[in-house]
Length: 570
Image (cartoon, rainbow, N blue to C red; front, side, top):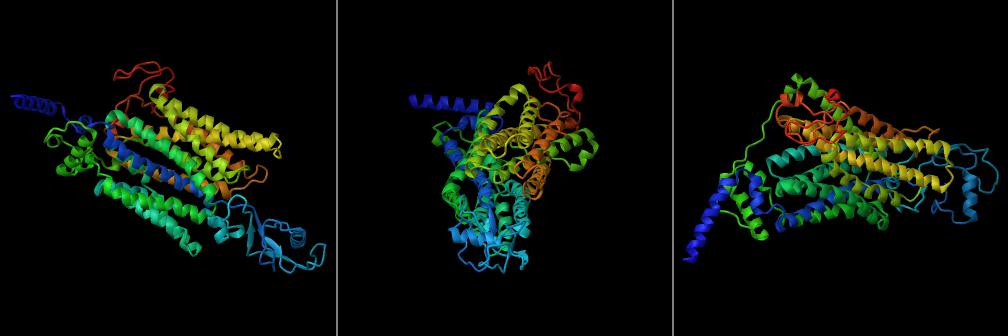
């Protein structure tokens, strides 16, 4: 009798679940929005996110070019560090009357003389000695990427970015075709193995080819781990888990700094960071599930149900039998990109956003690379530039209350002005004082704070402006523009020189001006906080946005100052 009563109660509950369950989010609510099962998976994806950041941050140490000079001819054991008075005397004689001791040297120096080398001619040197105080052995040191070959270092970085540029869209397509799990593990395997192989590059040409594969494999790590996370957790937990990934990503830079401090050979650093990807990928083969949401879109109901049942068991929740079959997963609508030709206002919005994507990537990675040019401890500089991203990302919790536009412009202007202020320090402060260097580091850190916060905001803002039918296409173009910014970053940091400003100030001035310009480009863009996403190109083109003190058509109250004015919005 008791068993019969329990069976009737279960059948009644199943009937209620069948009635209430309309989409996949309802199933996740039943299984547990962020139960023990999801938390275990989330930890592994957090590690993927952290490793993606470590790869990026380690580049600053790997590509670091320390102080150097020409190697003394006829002295096989020459070092940058002075070995004694006899060594100092040889350096003085060899470099006497040489205007550029980094790249030219007297090959026929007479060490018995104490005066200048009037009977010899300075020539370009082919061997160098480097200061190994901070970095024992870096990538430019191994392949002598200095003097006339210094541009090869920038070219190598660009090849790596091109790998990201090609791999990003491709892994996005693979994730939709063969699954999130396969695409993620494939990228981790290719990128990890390429990173290890890069450390064993026999020549410069081999190194840039392998580095392209390195970028190719690593290109989708953060986006794919984000996708898997957001598809595995319930709707009420996506904001927190997404922000958690961003915060851990920021922490990865600090972890990479610690590893680089103990592994001062670039080959060891590259192997340590990359091998971790390979090992993690091998482990995740056995416990990382495919996204059940993706499986349902492909009609694989049995596989999706098996994963959801396991999640329910570990989460200790009730999973009604056959409920997966009752949920319909519709593919999102699509539209040809040619439809944009009939939406001029939307095209202008997209172009303004793409300018900001380019500026953000250029400034974000440029400030990191520029840390190698600045005075002070390179490890402390990178550590500060990494951890400042944590409060920057938490600031994004305010954008629902104060709006996307207002917070974005504030962050970019503050970051831009901080970078521009380094010019005033260069002009009016005593550059020989150690405190002056600390001020410049502090200003670049504030600049990184503004840009990091802006990057997180513009990603959300873009999704809310791009219509559903061309959203993936539009985000793909945004990624291309961002990669163009990444290509410009090393050019600005390493190739552009103005003696009157100084190499530790000019890049910050350029980045600061670009950040403020980008923020001004967003003034015509509409506020999208608490608004429904546009589905069609027509909706996005004629989207109506609220004024600063009104309320939205959906009933949301608008905080004062959200948006500059309705008349300025496209």
